[in-house]
Image 1 (spheres, helix red, strand yellow):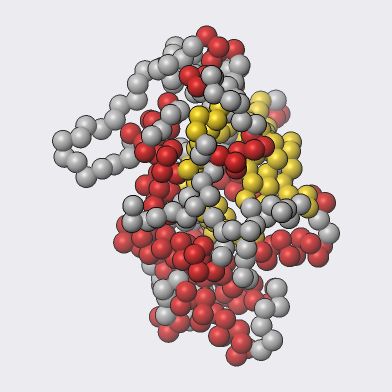
Image 2: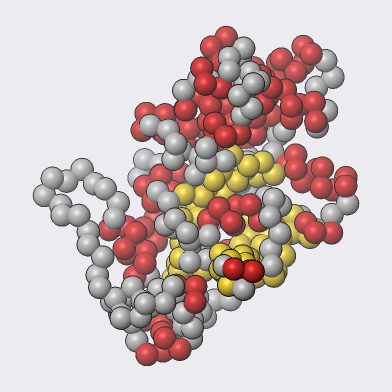
Length: 344
C-alpha cells in the first residue's frame, strides 16, 4: 500500500554569514514513512537546534528541501497540481508551538475557526458551520459559550492551543504535524492537550507526528520515536525500548536529563567528550563525536550508518557495527506495530 506521507533522503541547507558563503546543515539525509492503513503517533525528539522545526515545515510543505523529496500518497509535493495541493493542505494539518502567534489579535478566535471552513467549503450553511465548530471545540474539551466571541488575549494559553487543535480537526485531516504543541502551556493544560491528541489517533484515526524536546510526553503518547541530533537520526524505534534502554550516547544523555521526583537523585552532568571543537554539522565523522565519551578513531573519519540492534530499534553508533546495517529508507521497519499502553 502507498504510504500516507514519505520523506526520502531529505536534506536542508541554509546559507549563513556574509554574502551567504557559509552554510548550516539543518537536516541531512533524513527518511521517514508514515503508513496510511493504521493511525500512529510518531515522536521526533531532540534538543534545540537538532532540526525538528525544519523537519516539520518541510513535511508540511511550508519549506522546500535542498535535496531529497517529500511524497504524499506517492505524489511529490513539488509536482502537485493546484487541486492536489488543495487536498494536501486540507488533509495534512499543522499545530504550531506558540498559539498566540497564529492568531490575528484584531480578530476574535471565531475567525481562526471559520476560515478553514470557508476556504475548504466544509459547510453549506451558517448553521452547519456553527455545528462543525461546536463539535470540534467539544472534541478538545472546550465549551462554545466560554470560547467563541473572545479575543485571543482573553483566553489562556491552554485554551488558545486547544482552539488550534480544534481548528485542525475541522478539515477532517488524515495527518497532524504537532510542533511542540505543549511547550507554551502549564502542566495542568499539558495533560489535557496530550489526551486530546491521543484521542484523535484512537477515536478518529488520525496519524500524528509529534515534535518535541520533552521525552516524558513523547513516552506518554507515542508508539515510535526518532531521536535527532544536529539534523541526523541518532536512534529510532519503539518508544518504550528507546527510552527505557537507550543505546546511543546522545539518547542516554537526553534520558538522564529528564527531571524525576527523586530528592536523592543528582542532576545528570554531561560526560566530557573528545577535544574536538568543531560545530556538530561541520564534523567529518559522527556529529556527536565532540561530545561522546566513547569516541573512537573511526567516529572521526566517517559518520556511522544506522545499525539494526533490535527488531524494533536502530542506532547510528559504531559501538553496534557488528549488527546489520539498516538503510535510512527502511527506518519504519524498525518501528513498533502495536498500540501504546498509556498505563504501562
